[in-house]
Length: 196
Image (cartoon, rainbow, N blue to C red; front, side):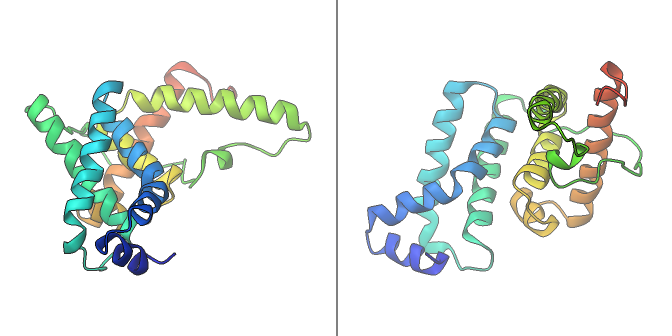
């Protein structure tokens, strides 16, 4: 079902249509909430608050972006304001650093892996590598975690990421480069390139 039809049905009172909206966007919303909010209880409350805001704001949606991008923006802003209230001085701080040419330009974690003839071995290796990446990712600042997640896992464009985070595209690209460099450095602190 197209975004316009879905929104039209929700605005006409179709509860199933709003359930469809939730199902289509819950992965993106969960990725944002999980990267920005630590407590499992607060994550549930945050998700409910986000979809309540979506429902109330739906009449204002003007289809200038995809519905999922607009909902992602609401999710990000809701989490951002929550963090700002909880930790005013450190809400979404980023680590300062230089721009580095990055050697992890992959859209997907699977692409970090070499082809292997042994499928079982490959699956085990993928799972272990994914866990290593998740641990290293969790040590980055919330904005870095969010951008890496949106780009590599949700496969959003720079434009969509800029719209969600309300950052200029240049800043999104810069932060993403820094985030990848920090992630790589974190991984190489504990593992050699051969291990990965």
